[in-house]
Length: 638
Image 1 (tube, rainbow, N blue to C red):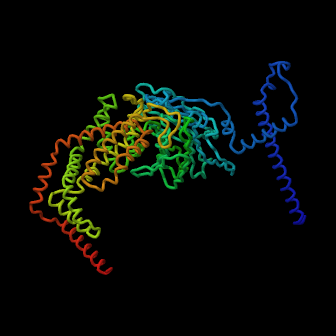
Image 2: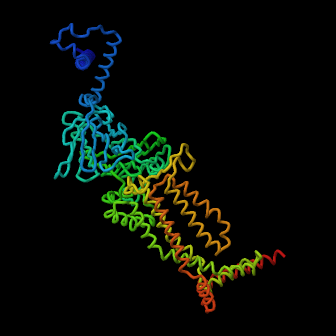
């Protein structure tokens, strides 16, 4: 037999062997598909396999060709899914949702078996403005989807855990018992024999922080090429406060860069807003006015896509929150540690997590303003809150303390205005002496000389006001963000953290609203009286204030009335008290300061020799040079 014959026989043998092997595989595949189809048919039509039931007791009908074709397509699709995902995952895609409960004295956590997500959270110590239990988000809006890829038989399959039903491995739900340190609920998604994804929720006594672990157990074969996994976290926030506008102003998405001392926010506005964060973050918060849901990562998120959509008033909802987060995957690790914070934006609670900077969720202002709140306002509030139950009285005491603290500055400001006022006749004489515009420099020099001789600082009335301005801004930031005022009633105000409506209007006034806030109205009236007294004093000291009359007396109080009508009534109440105390102080200063004696003292100071300071010498030299330049320019024009 020659070489060609041997080669031909060898080729024929290879073809026969390949055909036999291929045919065997096809038969095995066909048998497997038939078994799957039979199994599916048993699930869909169990009555055909119950021989104990008489045939005449069953509803019997003939299947149409379309139905048979549909069953065949379903069986084929089912077989394809099994081949791609495996039998365990396909079985886990069907099931019935079960809700497990974990709770301590502060919160009740509802965990769904469908996606093993936190379906909702109830905060036990708080209620919504309408008296209903305070839930962190709208029922049915919660989504927590971990997405990753599995590699099997050289094929890649995308798994979204939100589509599957997890099985409780540890039924440790329920109320945290006395003496128990913690309680854990473990839910598993089976991937294959000995391989599963597990979510572990651990609740601790007297804590709003929930430990949350994602575990990939026995998954080495499936995830050998996996480099990261993503988390899609979404929910819808309920309107928990009476005023939609005010609550929406403080509702946003916040996030934190690792090691940073501050936080970033998407901004507080209406409509839709999104941001693509391309750097690492260690936590993301769905922040409302007084409550927040925070997801913290032990190993940081690699990047994040954050978004919110705002509802229109009247739906009982505020915003749709959406966070898509990426986390690194390590082949040699099973456990990935996260934490959830579901709780109030209360500084004394959040400062326990100072390393994570969660206390920054309470908007206390910038560096200087924040310092005033941290070292003055909050300590006083916390101390008085231990002994006084009425926050209306606490605000009253706080106002008195602030006024006493800045009393020296207020007196100095009034005294400076009084000095300027009693020197007005001398100033009028200088105005008459230098009426021409080209003599403005001489007039200015003469006034400075007069003030210097009499010992008057023209800026003496402004500087004390500027120094106490941070205190006013600090309180402006503190009151609307203070959860301590939430639900606290005082006089006619039902909730000091929201507006106090004494009259609901049948129409809406632009920039004002559809209600009348009595505290805001009284605050504006007190502001008008204070402005009138202050204007009368400053106008007498300087005629240039006459042009500011409309703005000072009328425009500012009206603007504040429109601005504060929907603001926290506690803030309006504080500004009302502050204006009333200031009016009382100014009235008292008028009796304490004898202007005739003050003028005599100033004239006595003018007779004494005054040594020029270096600053004044430089100022006068500068004025002399400017005057000389003006003369030169006038000479050239002639």
